[in-house]
Amino acid sequence: MLRVPSLSRALSNIGREALRIVLPAWCVACDRDLPWRDRVASCCGECWRALPRIDGAKCSSCALPLYGVAGGTGVCITCMRDPLPLAWCEAWGEYRDGLERVLHAFKFQRHDFLDAPLAAMLAEVVRDRQFDAIVPVPMHPSRKRRRGYNQAELLARALAKTIGVPCDVTLLTKTAEKRTQSTLARAERVANVRGVFEASPQARDLSILIVDDICTTGETLRACATELSKVGATRIAAVSVAKAV
Ligand SMILES: [Zn+2]
Ligand SMILES: [Zn+2]
Image 1 (cartoon, rainbow, N blue to C red):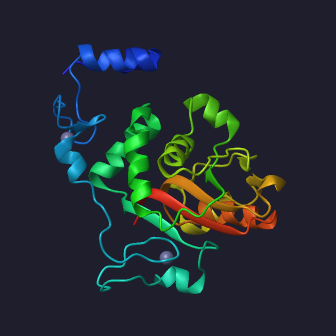
Image 2 (cartoon, rainbow, N blue to C red; image 1 turned 90 degrees about the vertical axis):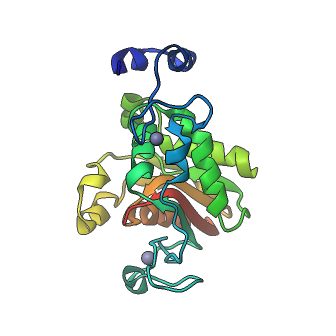
């Protein structure tokens, strides 16, 4: 199959849409030809329907699936000791298989047109919509310049449209860039996000929903929520597409 990543990158949004029409397209999850009708953006319908949704009980503090727990919610062992400072935390699926590949394409391969279908998943799992603002986990400006976009911000904006709560990217910013969180062990992750986020005084008295693409240990969400609390946000919850387990 012909692949033209450099050409694809060079094209604008409109250009990339045209590219998908004139060249054979492939499913980001299974690499097979993308059917013309049965598809969700760049994922074939078969793979999309097989995405690993978390159907059973989840930890009410960090959204970790709780296998063997019948119905309702519980709290995982880690959160029993040290719960996240959130009213609630949700995730749609597990970060593996098709969902891992879809999110990788969304994050690193400019498949930004996946924003609406992924935001629809977030809308399915948000426990309530009583928020003044939706805030994406911010990306440092230099990284955003390199990558061209912050995938969490695309999700937050699409979710804002879906559930009718405004997205405000000015309430939380990333002021320092340390190492990429995904390469670190839990203890290192805690230190790695300390002091890198800054909340605006405008967040005072607001209830805020934080949005991210992937939640791993939850230390990034903890750091974001802690800064928002410091400036007086009254209620903070979080939702991500996938929970890494
Ligand atoms: Zn597929
Ligand atoms: Zn937990």
